[in-house]
Amino acid sequence: MKKNWGTVLLSTLVVSGLTLTACNSGTESKASGDKGKADAANSVSTAGFPIVKEPLKLKMFTRIAPTNGPFKDMPVFQDYEKMSNIQVEFIEAPTDGFNEKKNLLFASNELPDALYRSGLTPLEAIRYGSGGQLIPLEKLIDQYAPNLKKLMDAYPEIRPAITTPEGHIYAIPGIVTVGSARTDKKWINQAWLKKLNLKEPETTDDLYEVLKAFRDKDPNGNGKQDEIPMTARNGLSIVPIMAGSFGLDFQLGYNINLENDKVNIWMGSDRNKELLMYLNKLYSEKLLDQELFTQKEAQYLAKQGSGNTGFFFDQTNNPMLDGKVESQYIGIAPLKGPHGDRLQLASPVPRDFGAFAITSVNKNPEATMRWVDYFFGDEGSTMLRFGRKGDNYELRDGIPYYTDAFLATGNQSKITPYAGGGAPHIISEKVASYINPPQVQEAQKKLDPFMPKVRYASPMFDEQTAQKINVLRNDIDKYYEEQSTKFIAGALPFDKWGEFQATLKKMKIDELQKLYQDAYDSLKKQK
Image (cartoon, rainbow, N blue to C red; front, side, top):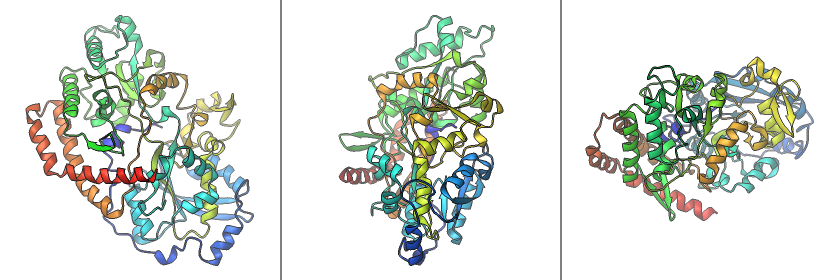
């Protein structure tokens, strides 16, 4: 139930393209033009339930995570079918190989009515939308999605994040309004701090001294130097976690600072060099986990639950609960860096782009939009995330909590498509009790003063520009990740920094920066 923000920001190509060319089915995509669709629209209620008077069947292609059970067995979809009078047949594809199967659907033009939890990239949305295989959703949202429209009005950063340069919306994101679901907390072992008579670190220098004490002074009391002072998720996830202490931001879904409305890709900057040098110092002195670049997610989670780690990062406290060591840890504020910076990384409010889309073969797009809109309200999101009242959850002060009996079964991830991420719905304070318990809320309070006022998501580029960015980023991102890993691990000395900068220039990082600048300028004009 966690989101790996570091990997998302540094490793995932938000604009990654496809090698397959979509078949053009524009002749089928007259959104509401023919009489059949007009008749269907007339039978769709704009409020309340059922959504349609006569039973309706829809097919939706979806990703099923390893932790999930079959969607047809989930109470949310069983109960919602009765409420809405719409039966959904889910075509389930496992996470491994999902993108290949999704691409094949479009390449063969054998389309379902909708794609649910589909993880469409912006480039895919534009390509398949302009090619006629996905339909524009903006008018449907205005007429049949009151919950989503309300959110888009309340959070103006949502609309430009999902609107193409031509003004169309081809895919709906997941939306996160609760701050604690948009951040990785900075968890430190307070039991070790107390035992060693140390204060919570406030600066990067403080952290260095604390980590040395964790390494050398046997805070677990077993007489062995087996403590892990600091760890993080695999690879370069440590960079965005610590970047804010060096004044480095992640705007527009990339390694970008916005300074006086100017886009600055900071990968070759002096500030980034300082960050990598700091991480190299921690790594070389064995203050940073030596398995950082090799460990799997399961190993990382096990270290959180072991109680033998001094400092780590996670959205929730769930792994600690498994090990019954949650009382050992507290969240701390972002560390003040050498120039006084204390920025907190946070994902955008429109967090999961391309979570839902409607295809051109769908004869009931109005009913389909009403169907998905329910989950962008607290009532529908509660059903999606918590199942049935009484059987799975209870209300405390109006907030849903899993019952103790249901928690004891360990089946939480079996009853909800939320587990594994990417479902089209809203995560608000009213539906986040499982990922936002008191300990997490307290940790988030330490981060709130340092959160960005606006976190711009990756812009929607036209297809030609998206292809250019994809080509540039394929080379630049791979080079940056490889070289940064070497800098941190000590395999590449910092006297090679000039060569690193020169290579980024040769890879046309300045051209990439201009493309993002143009997109940001267009975004500002929309506001």
